[in-house]
Image 1 (cartoon, rainbow, N blue to C red):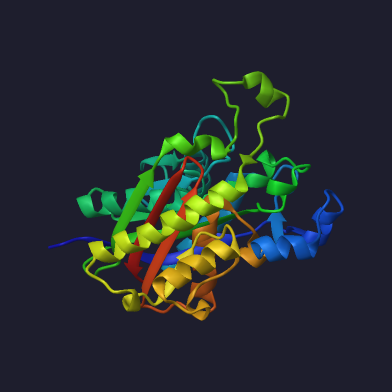
Image 2 (cartoon, rainbow, N blue to C red):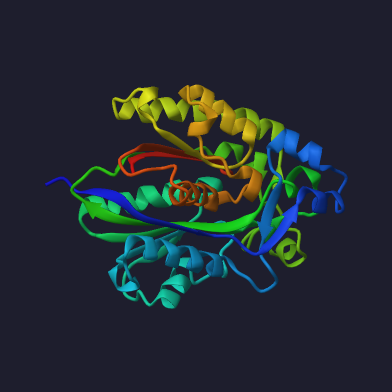
Length: 323
């Protein structure tokens, strides 16, 4: 019998604090019109003092468990995608495991920045297909505001915080059809945080470990790369563009989202867009958008969903599934 992985439930969580474009315009030289025209973003949620990535992940996980009708004792794998972990170690997945009471199962973090959730989903899907896992908790969670330079107009307008989660279960019916994961480290300087624990710790301690981006170059490569991965994903499954019911893209920039929709020949009413309300929440953006569309009734059981993302590294990936 062929074993597939299938999404049994989704969940998400956003911090209460909201930062609008008008708020940012009081911090740097910009305007609501400038931000909206170039990115599509109107507002973003920001963690409060003392609020952590694990806090966001826990809230999203509990909502996903509730939708799936599962409890912590059913979980036998936890994968958390994050660029902003609570600690150097233990991993955020281990901290979350303790909070949920799901002791004993494998729990680890994945770091692929904005593509992180797609990477984590791909890993969990393979665990389930191998027969070693029956019920996986897969999360993308970020507190990106902790690594943003709020004096840099090119980046501070873009990012927000949040978490999204799915419960992935073994099934006889096809769910996740395929995942496609890629990276090319030659481009790391176009989008990166230039300091870390083993390289530039003094800069980290001085508060200089902030996101740096060459936006125009990232935009050009992202559009071209995402176009290619759409073709790769459809070809791998013997599918046509018309077979895709919904596109759930990484919420980085409305112009990148629109370009991918054009590549698929999808009208924008078949594309889940949350970038205006959430900003770019990195690894959290795809599962956040998925949960929004599932809970408002747009995405229905049996429909074909294509998810894709592009992030620092560069990393990029896609997943196509029957919901």
